[in-house]
Length: 199
Image 1 (cartoon, one colour):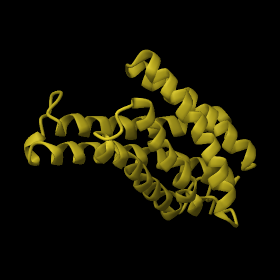
Image 2 (image 1 turned 30 degrees about the vertical axis):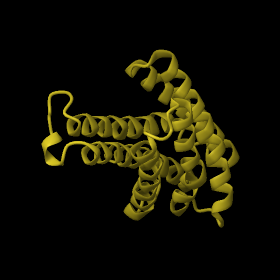
Image 3 (image 1 turned 60 degrees about the vertical axis):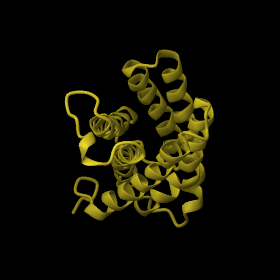
Image 4 (image 1 turned 180 degrees about the horizontal axis):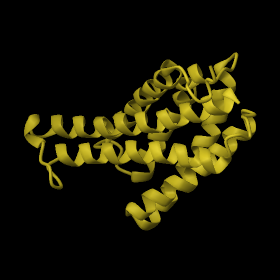
């Protein structure tokens, strides 16, 4: 059977779930440390450090590499590029435009680095891989944003009554955003690595 077309579910979902836990851990900085870390730049930086330290290791089950060290280092460099580009677009535009284009160009930079230094196959093409990861990343990010806003009582759906008002609902909303974001991005990255390795 061609595993590049029909990958084992565990090859995709296990690293995706692990990455979602890493993202939730990163968003813990926002959920629990937002009142302590006052600077927006410092908050983003600490969140990014969590991804840099654990993101690559979480994707190891789909990598086919003998050791997680190389993947962890390459991912850290790639994610740092993604984070810088995304943050620049967000800080300049502070809108969905900034988030969307920052994500696209940031992911493109990250995948260029991962593809080169992990020596991934040239098939599928880079634009195909960027489209794949960007799709899952965007779905996860926006689903997380929808969940966050609904729990906070913003937008068309008000789910704030599901939890006690105050710290609890805010914490759950922020962690929920992190989990959804991480699951989406993890699915995209694990599929990207698996497809490239299978070729």
